Length: 277
Ligand code: BTN
Image (cartoon, rainbow, N blue to C red):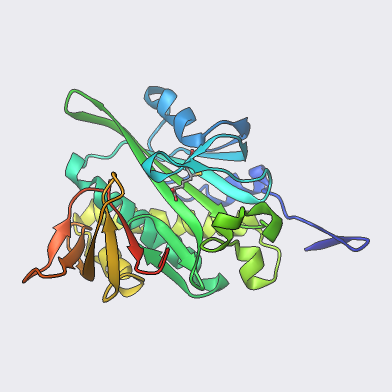
């Protein structure tokens, strides 16, 4: 952390240092820094055939970030991490849910040193009960063949209160606000990519997702909670979350039902009875 008079200087990414540090990782090879793009996910999807497996695209400024369920992901320049990982995996389309869970496990682990990090299935990461990071996975198929996957990750590092709308401030925060310290984005990116690389390589080698499913279960904020499951039209059903199954699906037991069932579609959102969680 540097001080300029009484003003704090927000630490910036050091692209050359970062790509040197990720040089031993399969994921993060190469690491390309983009000055400003509308969305790192869209940038990657538009250039998928020419990007190698493992490429990471890191935006210094992202002007039109995309969130899950068609939402916007808006962040002020220089105060957050916006990156996309390009993968050309040999997985089946129904294993994409597992990839979201692998990413959530890697993110959750890399955020442990900033506070009590938890996963709100499928793609929100919370620290001390507030959302600080989100995941958006997009894929490209030709006929039924998977051409590539883009794993988009956004992390609120150095945002301050004024950067959040009244609506968002209830459920979201930044690592800076929660820890009271300026966050070094390079260290966090390196930690996340190292965790992702280790879990991904292990999964591809063993074909066994249980190591990261174990993390998702252990650090789930939803398991054993009474929730509302919302369908895209805004209707909801009350249920209790019982588990995350071996396919990465949330197991919910709807009120009045005898046994839990998997929540198969990612179009549904799960919220606490009194709000976000
Ligand atoms: C969510 O929580 O709804 C998901 C947010 C994902 C945001 C990231 S930022 C990098 C990548 N590029 C995008 O346009 N979105 C993802």
